Amino acid sequence: MIGSLFTLARPLIHRLDAETAHRMTVAALAAAPPLKPAADDSVLASEAFGLSFSNPVGLAAGFDKNAEAADGALGLGFGFVEVGGVTPLPQPGNPRPRVFRLLEDEAVINRYGLNSEGMEIVAQRLAARRRRGGIVGVNLGANKESSDRAADYAVLARRLAPHADFLTINVSSPNTPGLRDLQAESALDDLVARTLAARDEVAAASGRRTPILLKIAPDLTLPELDGMVAVARKRAIDGMIVSNTTVARPESLRAQARAETGGLSGRPLFAVSTRILAETFLRVESQFPLVGVGGVDSAETAFAKIRAGATLIQFYTAMVFHGPGLVKTIKTGLAAEARKAGVERIGMLTGRDAAAIARGETL
Image 1 (spheres, rainbow, N blue to C red):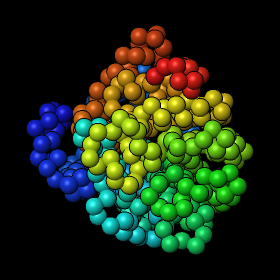
Image 2: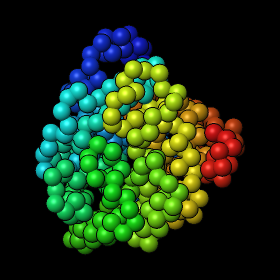
Image 3: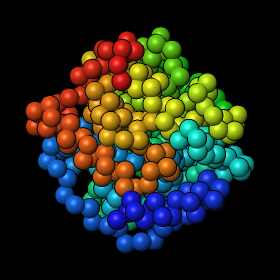
């Protein structure tokens, strides 16, 4: 039903500029009573960083930036939702236009610049929905004008940990000048240590420990990845999300908007993000789980993320082109793959082909 409605509405939606269409979609999900999706196939049940998921398919950060529509998104059938990025203080982000559809490429370029209503409003919204259930995480980002960006993440962790099921340290957005510099090993070590310490302060007072994940860029060199994984393992982080958008522009891009600056997401991101996922899986050596994101637009691409090392997967851009019915399509396909492989849980296939994918032999 949802898929059919999207098919009818898509021509009208795509006549709007991308940001207006995005805002209208979030507002509609926030205003409508949440749907009650059918129970998930038991083969999709997944465990990661101490949480139990009815299915491994999540909504990536960037869609619901200010925690307005988490319940509506969960009602679409997602196993979890990540809201944000959220900054300590409100900030407008970059001037419009700042989002561009690449229709021919099934891709999007954005340069939002972490536009956020700030952590206080997000904390209030999350607190108001806390008893409704469903797994909701929060993506954390630093204010553009902050003089101590590592301190921003600690402040965010302290304020939002009581209201979130997990928190994500996002140092990989390409649209805040200098933010990706925090991926350097020494800077990252300090940032992660301070963020974990803030989380642990909250846990000591509340008795509830909120998992902390680290989200990385797909554009890392392998030595850079080595350094980031070393920090994550040393600091006993709870998981990693691989990956954010890319600043690269593949030669295959056809749409005129390919020349716009910003982070590229969608189908062209799939191969590079999946290979860096596989490389990360090999380096992590099962110390913590990974979330695979980037170019997921079908059951096949979702399953490729799992084979490359993901315990959970996320997508967002593909909904622009395929609509919310894609959630059910992916879940149905993943359940079929698990049964085809003769396993009781889809997670038993995690990392099955990681070495081959890292070598570029298969996707």
